[in-house]
Length: 268
Image (cartoon, rainbow, N blue to C red):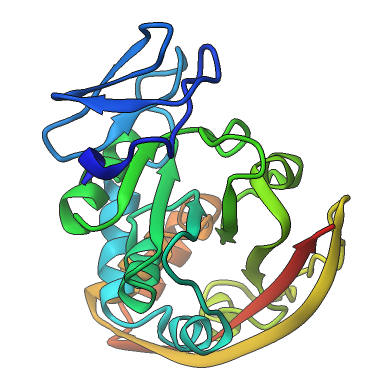
């Protein structure tokens, strides 16, 4: 899919535009970035070899997404937004690529790009969603020119608002999706004797105005090994005592609410 990416990405070394040529991408300064056999490009300079989420977490996340974890969030996205030809949509911190895949499904004439620090995640996502452009990239240094992006989605990942502001065109949207206060309440209740509700982010990033805040609620049911998958894509799998995790995994079924808080901001 990167064969149609001319003019979308910029070179992380010099900031000039990248153009595909054969199995690589080049800028006017001659800097070269190879395109993988799965069709993504790595635009991270240096850094650790295995940055970002690992294989187990990405695999667990993919299985949970296939079970409908984001079902209500997807439905909201489809009815709340409208993108068309010429629009560039970025899913920053795309993970397994499932959200980026849905964006392309709902808005097929727009260009959708998923970026993530995890080379493993991007490789898997590029193979599964060939109509989406994927790049290994840091959300703190997005590989897009100033004011070239129509929308940035940050879904359950670290938001670098200043960088989103840089790449977004004036009047375009930043969409921040975070856990609502009751997100996974029953799941946490099965792990802990005392449960704290999630703290919600009420802030408005500098250079933006709030267009709206929305709460998307649903119920997620997991059976058997699916419970371990749900835990595996959350911080609780590493922060919780093994004995409590084993007790959770022994349950035949778990039903828990999901609550997504969606904050939509407009770049001033």
